[in-house]
Length: 265
Image (cartoon, rainbow, N blue to C red; front, side):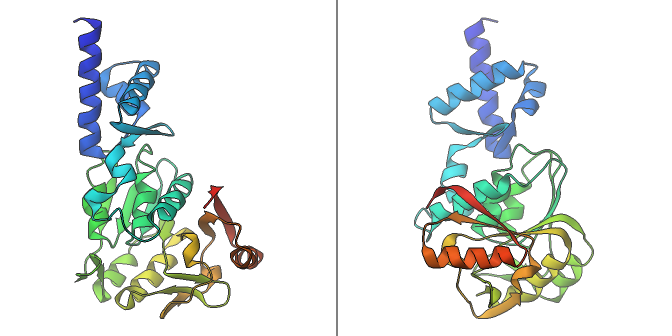
């Protein structure tokens, strides 16, 4: 087979893999295509230049699913979308090969795990129908959807059955999001139906990671979920806003590790 034909076939197979799995790792492609890691990296670089994928640490993701999220029902016009994606990228750095995760519904939580698409052997429990349907396509991951009553508005499950099922698991990390995050008001949400599930998820993980864009900091929503010290890590956007910085400092003083995105939003 001519070199050019062989490369074309590899590129096609890489895209086919991405369309199925949404994310692939360099090592995985190297094994499947019986090709060196160096060659795979060059292939990914070429496909990125053609706008067909986006390279991430250790692998690649589909451009559309990475940047748009439209296949998940997340509109380009979703409020603070770019802020959420920046937080998700940063939070993904906390996920390691083999982690067990329990996560709540939401664009930021979902994209956090998507950005960790090159991690191997993840075990994921979620209350989100959208997240479960999307992530189960990843060949190397195990995905469990909680049972319960479905919230038609946001496509997540809740109720007594969901809470009981959460109690069966203990995850390495919980990845949650809130509508309000404040040092005094604590963790709050607009999702009345999901409060008990949120509380249960926070109780069933060794490390609790809160992903919240900077607009959520200093906000108090209608339903109280817990205290700020109920999470171990807060991932949010870097900011120069004096009031937000003051709140983040107070949160850090409570013993919560505050991680900010690399660039000021």
